[in-house]
Length: 167
Image (tube, rainbow, N blue to C red; front, top):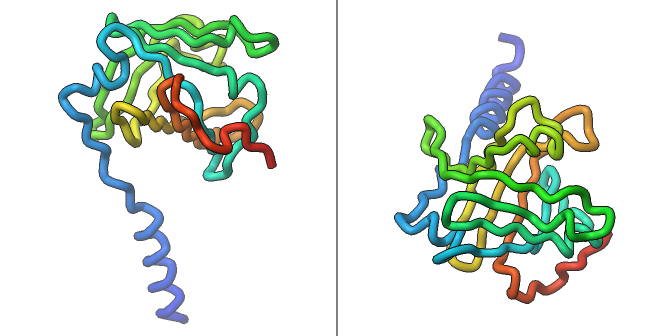
């Protein structure tokens, strides 16, 4: 071994980089928190792409997603000018083998609208309560390599300071 400190440093870096946050624990009423008693509409408060806050243009500012307690969902993109088509899908809660909670969306339009090979997509739940839904997902829209998107969602009638953020 030429430089034992280098090996220790590399080992520590690898050990730190593989540490994962423990899974968020969903409560028994998680489905009700997401969809309300009949439906619940969320708006995008903030979006991060690889830990960098994204600009909130017109489509992001007007974006709403509604989860219905019959396990369907839809967004309002098609109602906005130049924001794309409306997404309609079914939703369900899913837990990975290591117990991370996800919202699984399933529907034919997912393939087309998100450029997927499958008709489903998983959104990791990082936090969920009555006034906050934080989702993390991989997306490959503008880059050749998928980036990590974190969406911070709030009920549509919530006021969010500095929501119209621009760099």
